[in-house]
Image (cartoon, rainbow, N blue to C red; front, side):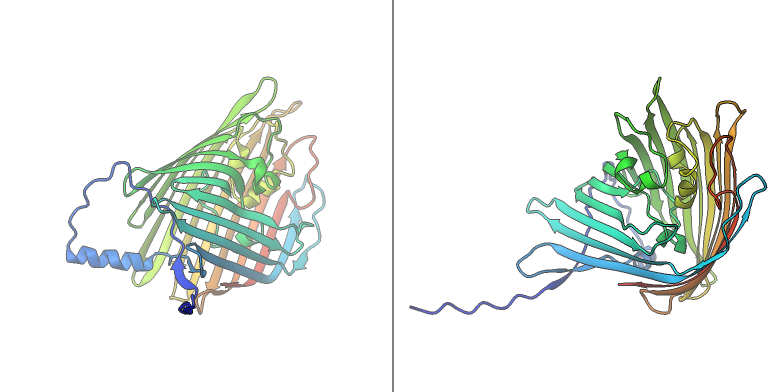
Length: 394
């Protein structure tokens, strides 16, 4: 019998994770670009974040990418209690460590439809008595649709430039979302979200007995150095009678360059009636969840201003200032109030890609006036935190 010809060995091939890119609903004819504009466009493309790289394994047509970030450091916290609150905890020094991992795939079907998946989780060292891992993402992307656990489409500023974002669980929700590109610059999103399925349930009060998930509508504009985000949310509050909470947010970021230095500025304001989980940062939500009940009637707002300045290609600094204010009408008192002000700044050195070393300082003032509610030590008053950290990404 004739021998079979030897098959050439197959090897893993490099690839990039490509997200679905639906055509805009109202796409117009692109204007003719001059040579100078084309050169500027090429420079802008170079400045964008590089695509997520992976490998196509032998015998497979799926691109697989595994990435991660390990963060470690030393943190010093000092407390001063408010006059009406319980005594503060003792000043403390801790050594927080966290490790985040993400597995993503991308596959294009014969029909041209692109399907993607992503799964991410974070492991934490025991801080505040909590050391359980958190699931940050578990999604399936089919064309313009997203299913699974992901960040809320209502959120805009997340504080990724600050180390606190690696120290506390991210705000994830169960989600079904449809992203609709309207033009080259405008994208609309419609989503149904269930905070009880994600990490949000551990950082903000979620009412039980709900019959319908939260409804989110979002509109995003991206052009040049601008990103503008506007969203509204509607959520059911069970009770007798049941009612609906609502929230709205508007935020914008501008990224520019002047005198050889890159910089960016972000501003955001959100307001809510019976929608406290949509206000503030993750740190604010974690504080409020320890004193607020899901059935409480609330109204309030949150605002933040954040900036970044790149001194050199390796050295950058970030700062933000935020306010959280919530009115809580309660029985036997005129009103309850929660107010949290925060300021933080850091200096980050990135000598090589994937490695960061920095120092960050933050101060928070919290006033909690809720008659009849137990206020844990350290929640009301002033807290100053200083962190020295190192971070490695791969």
